[in-house]
Image (cartoon, rainbow, N blue to C red; front, side):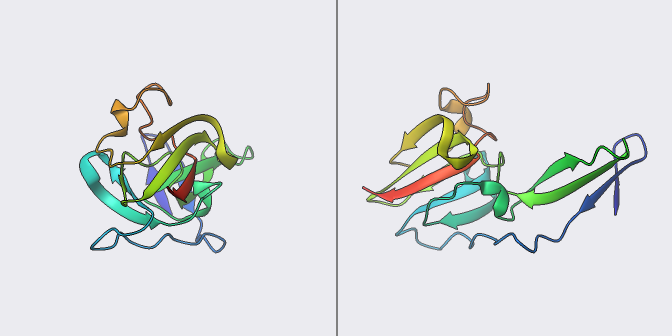
Length: 141
């Protein structure tokens, strides 16, 4: 258990039994894409070679919390890539379509080359597509 914030808020991180962690970034990108936690390819990274309808199912560097409703000081959370990426590298001959919603819904943007800062991509959640991608289609061009 970790105490978070100024008040007696307790956050319980569940071991993500149903979550399949994404593989780490390869030394040389020849297929798919690599997603990064921070802009300019910083922070944790993961290699994605197939479409993902819900990034919340893949353990990642960010905590997604859910209020249980029973106790105002208790939240349940899991580690996730959902709404947790700030830059993307795209392998030659591949493309990615990023979506702000789960199941390939809501706003989308297609990329066929590296994007060092998703804040600079118009649309998304107010600051470009930074930290607001919930699903990804990964395809060969």
